[in-house]
Figure 1 (cartoon, rainbow, N blue to C red):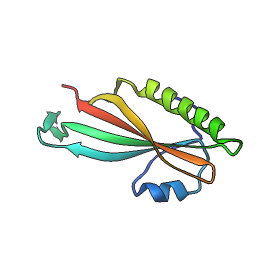
Figure 2 (figure 1 turned 135 degrees about the vertical axis):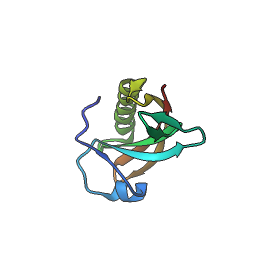
Figure 3 (figure 1 turned 45 degrees about the horizontal axis):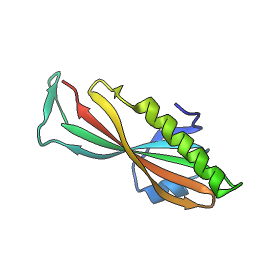
Figure 4 (figure 1 turned 180 degrees about the horizontal axis):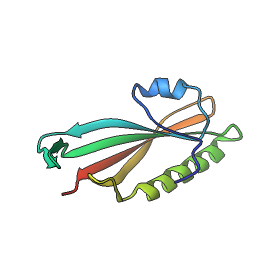
Length: 120
């Protein structure tokens, strides 16, 4: 995994996360959606059929926009490579896409969507 200075789980809106004081670069995991249309039972516990996570990746570069974009892309690519087919015990993580959430005061925020399908 890339060298993140802050890694945590976030519950709340992304705007509050962007404005939160923190050491960058950072990564924040957010549970976005889970589906129970076809629940699975794992050891007597009902598990969702699929989960979608959002990983908010934030980095700061005050030198130039192009340098910031290159650094952000490197973080996104390295993170996706590490998470690709990661076995969580309930299923495998699959990075789907990343998109720009916003840029404010030299801090770029990207959202990476990760799907996790139940793995019997």
